[in-house]
Amino acid sequence: MPPRMNCLLAALAFGAFAATAVPACFESGCHITAHCEGDELHECVVDNDTGSWESKTNCAANGRVCRQAGGAVACVFPDQPCAEDACAGDRIAHCSVLGLVDSYLDCTADEPGRTCFAGAMVPTCGYPAIACPTSGTDAFCAPDGVSLYRGCGSEVHPLHREDCSTYDANVCTTANGIVGCANPALIPCATNESFCSADLTLAYGCGTLGLVSRTDDCAARGQICKGGWCGFDVPCDLASTDSWCSSDGSTLYLCGGNGLASGVVTCDAGKQCTERTIDGRTYADCR
Image 1 (cartoon, rainbow, N blue to C red):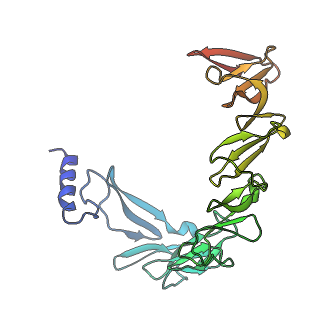
Image 2 (spheres, one colour):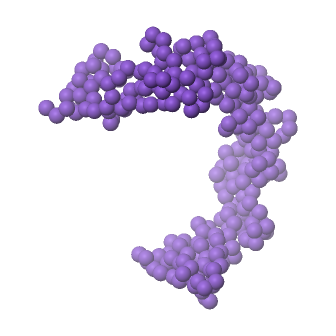
């Protein structure tokens, strides 16, 4: 019987006793117990599809050392004892089973402005200076009119903040029982609809609030609005044209989904726009 089949049968039999356990039989890979070799941590990494292999981590690369006690082994900071996970300024210090900090999570890494606070269950990242509504709602607008906070749930402070003003100068508002960002004019619309202003200078997109949440100034780009999107006032058929050339061959046009040119490229000096047809569709490039 092939080794992989033997391994599969062994895994199935083992699963009858411990469904969540990792099968111990593999065609190839490592057969070690996690241990330290100097400040290098050696572990057996398991993948039920490809087998197992020995992983080596250089603990010293970020100022840690490799420590082991009993059956526990980890890369840790030797001068940072701990009893549990805790806040360390804007970071969450993770406490290893060895009673030493083994890693930090920087709350500001993905979302500047956040810090660490004692959450309902564990230290967490969020905004401790902001109180969640007593109504128990998950998201709400702040008094500044542009900050949208989320992640209240069971917490007394929100976990995330979105600045609505960074998107088309929107504001935070509540409509139809939903909190979100919208155009400050609070223009009503059909959810997920895209449409143009009457003078075709602005392109609008409707969000889940039933209010405009996307506002593109087509005129500022030297374009017009069609189908709720901006484009140059040069019509095209996207079904048959990906791109095409101007009559003098100096300019390349890209066809947009709204039937207007979405881009205009002037060929570099010494190059000419050339068209070719593939499967009945026109493509162009500067050569």
